[in-house]
Amino acid sequence: MQILLKIIFFLIFAPVLGGLLSGIDRKISARFQGRQGPPLLQPFYDLYKLFSKQSVVVNGVQDFLVGGFFVFVVFTGGIFFAGGDLLLVFFALTLAEVFLILSATSANSPYSAMGAQRELVQMMAYEPMMLLAAIGFYIADGSFNVVDIVHAGTSAIAVLPGMFFGFLYILTIKLRKSPFDISTSHHAHQEMVKGLTTELSGNVLGLVELAGWYEDVLLLGFIGLFIINLQWWSILAAVLVCALSFVLETFIDNLFPRVKWDKMLGSTWLVTLVAGGINLLILTLIH
Picture 1 (tube, rainbow, N blue to C red):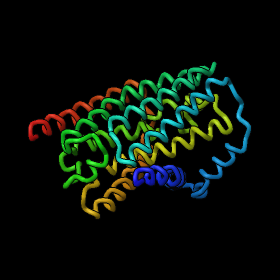
Picture 2: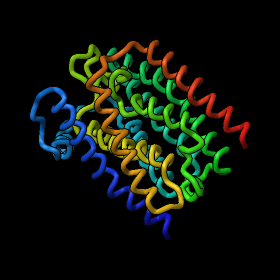
Picture 3: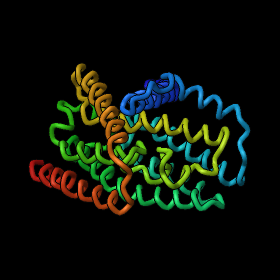
Picture 4: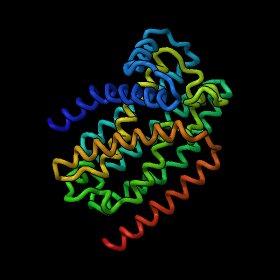
């Protein structure tokens, strides 16, 4: 019953928090650029407008694949916040990305196809660090289960500082921020129109946006997993770290220009090898 309540809580409140985070992101970005910015609730207005519009259907397969992407993102978040297996969470999240890539390739559009190819490169960049982090949690706490990790005596970041830095680095990719936003063109000045989502419109595009809100909350949950332990105050510390991490990612998004895919891939693998690899080696020796 407790697990079911956690899942229901995530299903209801994650999109609310995700939409507010999107609004905060826009506000912070506007301040960096010397603008007033849209209202905090503007993302909710935009989502309502998308769902009220009729979508232009490219093909039936694309709609099915977008639906699969949404379902697996929500499924992944449900497993994580219910305290499930961390490896299953990462693999399910990867499967969700595969559905999104296939939906882009199913459309006869050069921009959409280019976005799908670049999304695959992004997956190659961040997947090793995510798997390495899961292994680090297992060695540190003796379990892949989220519920066991959060009930540890000490915060995982105490023995996984390199993993935390590496995950924070790839978070820029997962949140689709510059300099690593190469597949969806978050900023209007980029050359790919809207990359992966070029051929999506109406309620189908709204479903992708809603899935992004769920995923943002899930990703910040991963950050919080490094901080939470048995102590009650660790929850407050985790919320603070998550908030600071989100603001940092927004700051980076507005400060750095987009890089080419090879620099993104090379720098991410270097951080994974140095920060994650050395941390894992030290962790293996002391355990």
